[in-house]
Length: 100
Image (cartoon, rainbow, N blue to C red; front, side, top):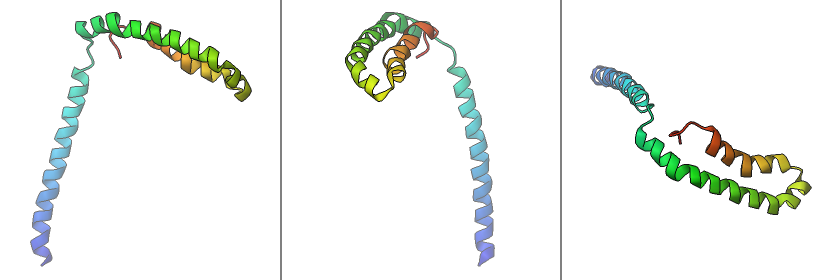
């Protein structure tokens, strides 16, 4: 009985290992092909995403000022400022054009 199970199981494992090794190569190739930033991505970033980032900075600064008394009580002013103003500022002004 075990001889009947061994042969199909061996064939299944060989096919499974071969398929997995081929799939990992294709995933790596797809990741490398997608790393180039296109002109369209840069245009969308410059005309749409960066202005939205500027709006996020302004809104975050307003929310930070409103929440400042509570942040002082909770002793997390630095963390609140970083999350509400700093992160949007880095997203808007520091990152390369076209990278989302």
